Length: 482
Image 1 (cartoon, rainbow, N blue to C red):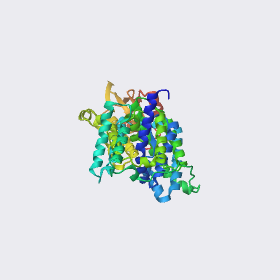
Image 2: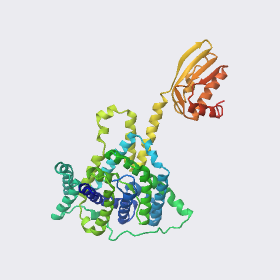
Image 3: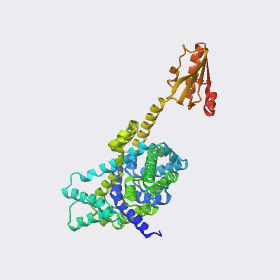
Image 4: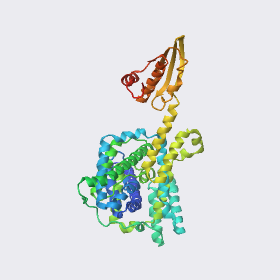
């Protein structure tokens, strides 16, 4: 607040985001099957609430497409009151997850999944603009091209005013001055004329209600948290700062509870608007997030008639440039693909393919993590080997087991010993390996049992403390090992 230049950046960033939120919120309301006011009020309450509660400054939370897809069946089958109850319950679940530290699970998401998440999101943002470019006059294409030109060229001249805001104002002025007949924000749906008010869902407090809304609330909570935490991590990388993921998790929950009681459809972090705020506008503080919500309400309630005249071409130009800036072009360069391990590229492509096919970022991220896990297990499983290290006398042979031993890598350990050809005494040195699970203990039991069946003795030595404790506790007690 003491830096006029920074304050100007935050204020203008919030204004640009508010303008970009309007058509998005209306579109997501249509997807969810509710009145546009439900999405607009959700975007207002989410942005204002998360500005105070969230753990990632400058990140924008509002009504989102992923949440709209999850809750659409509730509206269609049970009505708006059950939707509000679902949003409130989802918020409470997110608060619980946040307090339980679910945000720490972010460390299990590999970099290749993050790259796939970013690229898929850029593609989805671009695809979302295509309906506004189909079946329209050439004037719309010319306006989109002009808007893109302004966004690209203006920063080379001055960065005092965000280029997206200039593009929106200029194209709106041209539309009004020449009375151009082009699609505008008003065509997307009716804008609210009054402030949001407190709403209590008219649903029975019973187990039947919980059975109806519970699965949808859980799905909404998981999808919202995943998108929010992934977006927070992306902003961390862009701004080279750290954020409090646990606070962000429970903050999203509280914001959804507040949104539900104001009759909103709920939401989570929005990558597109966040990138407008952080990358295009240069905002870095909570002020921009708070003002995005405030400006949104002022625009749609107080200046609804003016906002309705904004041509969709201007907003399409902004979002196209956001998608271009969001996409990680380095990840698809031929030089990068040649250098990158094929497994990493496969994980990235799987994340992108599933996300784009389902239009659900959560499905894509889960798929990417699963593929990454399978690739990792497959790679590590082949790093374990058994080598003969000594033959001190005619009756003794010493083997060394090298590598990390778990269910995948220890499965073929049984076949790497010469049970018939080995002498009476066999020593298995485990000092260069580690036992991670019961499957490995069962495998070692099977090896000693096979030697015993041949009248020979196999002795396991060299276990580190953790492996010795696990082996001592489980050896001989696992079904099917004797």
